[in-house]
Length: 243
Image (cartoon, rainbow, N blue to C red; front, side, top):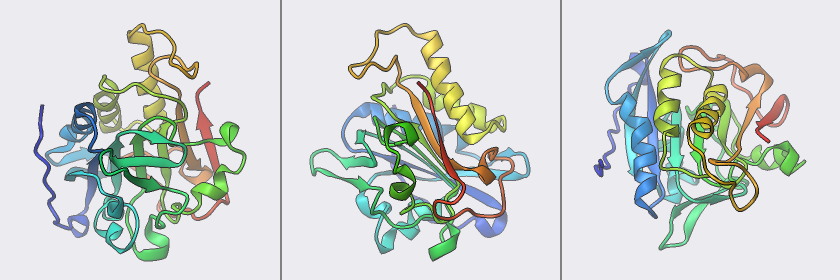
């Protein structure tokens, strides 16, 4: 198991690089494994379509990575972020012992439009965090706090089981230029098909039901090519969910 957490604060954007960040809830070892199994696929320059991707941040998470003035050096300095930890609706934990986490309904705006940020894709592997339409009809308004150039948010709408093949499988699907949210759903389904397990406490089948919040214009974004026009606010925002 890899326990090295290092940040390389080199700005590769001018060189044509896209940067991937990995942030871990300081709670359980499985969350370390989840994030590592994704970011390890991008430790060297990885060409996907017309873009080159590399993991440049791998860190224990803190709330200030996601909100406040410092977030521009962390989540919003990356092009794609993969997180793992405990969660609940619109919330992701960063440190269990300190009782810290991020409320995304009041977090800083992410993306190019309001503060010169950079992130396009945010993946949160946790229970319940990525709330879609059928679970909350006002989801657009609540997610609009962070969608100011952010293209897609993916995760789970139910309880979820991690420490399995999902992160590794997802990373490889993306390297093959699969769609961002589509590859996430496929990775969750693949895990469900390969491993038998009883249903979870909320009735969802192992390993949980995936969800995503996207825009019509970003529907088919992938690492190799994604829309150059950054979306904003709630116009065109919709959700996908498994059931």
